[in-house]
Length: 146
Image (cartoon, rainbow, N blue to C red; front, side, top):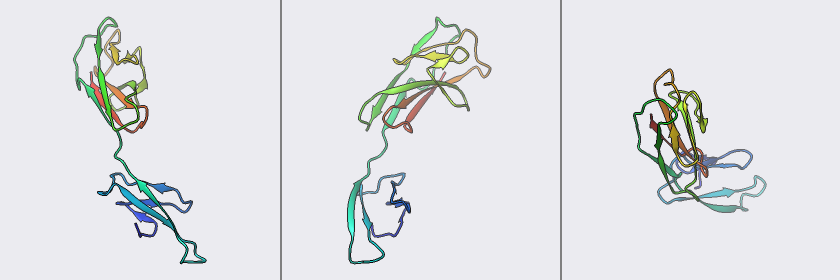
């Protein structure tokens, strides 16, 4: 958009020519990336880039209280909008730690259908996070407290 190197509104381009989109799409939804050689400023090539917002993931319910014991289960559902698919991967993690795909015996497990099974004994913190992660855009997530 006629800003050498770009900016936070229209995105930036690095010295290798790799374009980095802005965190928020511009109001028009598009930007123009131009290249001009040092040898001849009259020669220019341009490309229009359409920037879309990242997908949104929601989870339901957003919190749940349950007793420990693997026989105790809860079904969580997710909705993904703005992605090519609605597929998610399910994770379980202790609050403040990296979540584990599918969980484990200590925190509880969750299957591909969102069915969470409580651990045999409560985890140290007594609560965990169940997280749905968009397969198309892994930075789009939603979590529930259990």
